[in-house]
Image 1 (tube, one colour):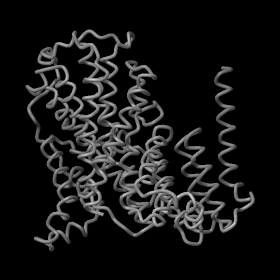
Image 2: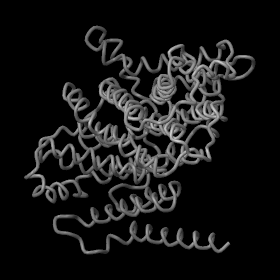
Image 3: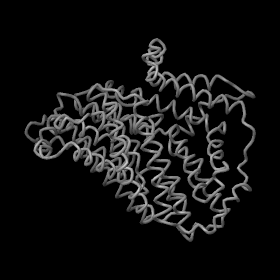
Image 4: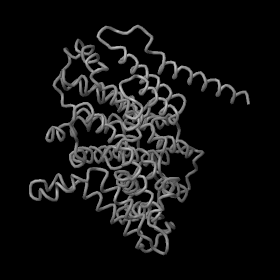
Length: 485
């Protein structure tokens, strides 16, 4: 009881501090060249960040939207339409619902099991690990990392149990297996924008600040090679540098395990077929805009939301054995991450407000950073941005990292002549490579909660893998991006 009281007192104190920052910060002396409304929005930003990291995600997001409306740069209707009324929110809801259909029909589980039961997976322990992790990587490219981990973690744990490992002994190989699965559930989110709020948030901030767009195809041309190379380097690092003892690993035992697979059902075919059509609608315009401009124009006109919204409708209408492919009420309850959506909405409204000309924050920080930037090369500036994003995303929410750093980086980009699109893509991607601490992402929280992992091991392996990703992003990712932007 005493411990609970202390926790409540701490939470109350953090709440008080956060609200004071949001609503009283404007009364502090305002720096030269910064309008008072800019000072007020800085206080709202700092206060919201403080509440999100110390108290909760839910109600502070609403407090942030309310506080923005009190500044006068937006009325309440505009603040709402710029936050939870933004198209990204509807897009993410639709993605969650279609993902729910893929899970309930068994498509996602079938894909994961397909990978680990391939003949190549039985040839050596590391090939099995690679195939299991690859299944996570592929699924996370199109589903949320949490969803993928919920499917893949039980498979990994059943393998470890079959091999006789005990989670209480904290042996090295089980830790690496669980960590690699969780790492891939993070890496995959940075490989595509499909249903991933972090990447889409970066896109939206870029659009609001510069009017520039990033196509799904162009982003994936960068994200997929970077993700695959990081995945490969992680496996090589674990195998040749960490070198766990794998003498007990009898890969042939996977043949005897009961994965409860059955013949593919009509429900699965409809679910995966519908998702496939949606994905084609997203990426096809970039490839046929010259050869088939009419078709490309029609698909482009549907926007990002149109195809996935239509998929939700179709999957809800189609019934097999008197049951819908997508039970939308069940999906709302079980699969939609409402608190995360509210956070994204608040960040969208905050980013729009911070970018407004009358607020004066962008020119203020540009002027403030000029003396430092004058002595930096473009390449060093980009390295600093990527590294800062990588470190921050392991300490605070990746959405918050993107919101703060993208706004600042784009504001400073003109001084050095760096493409704001390049900076946005790099920040949005690396912010998903958050696996050094349990607080970095919910994926890592779940992995730590499995009981197989020591915190120190997560930190060491996570930091090394994070820096591997940074190097690959700079050496391979940047040249790819420069082909497009």
